[in-house]
Image (cartoon, rainbow, N blue to C red):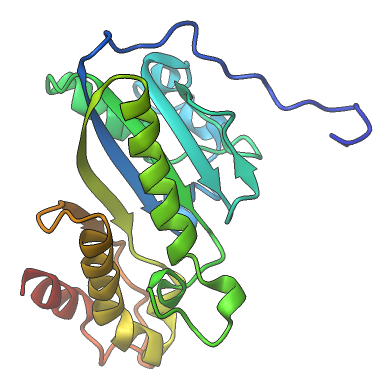
Length: 230
């Protein structure tokens, strides 16, 4: 429909650049799979939650750029933070940025890179046998470009952290569930090395994994905590 002119994606423009010239910008990267992308989180539902209506509004104080669905939906440079999912969906970046601002963190920028159909192995430097699904090079370049663009605008940039939500599909199959902690660790190590930031903070989140006898023998929550702590 977009190609025929019957439907046009809403234009999302920053009214003005939100950060003072030469100021320090704190960049947070949001990354992950289906739930980080917000595949089934719809704006209609958000409007009915306490405080949700406020999150539906474009926040001109926070610049945001994104690549969703493995590059299916890409921002037009930096846009104001707000719901930008292709099908009226949104992700955790809305409440995350609001919580940061509520706690007094200023000059926040968000860069979001997701692929709802990916597995954790697709994010690792080695990737899987399906080389066309390897996301690591594109993800690394996305982070680098986000940082460099802010620097080109005259800002000091603090890459304040990468928030990665663990893939849900991996938790439903024994071999992938067992391999998830080491694969996440390989991603963390590679990004720190390639960006030359050995102390770069990662915030790993995960939903409660599926409760099924075929996978319950793998205590993925405990193993994930042990591997990442080590």
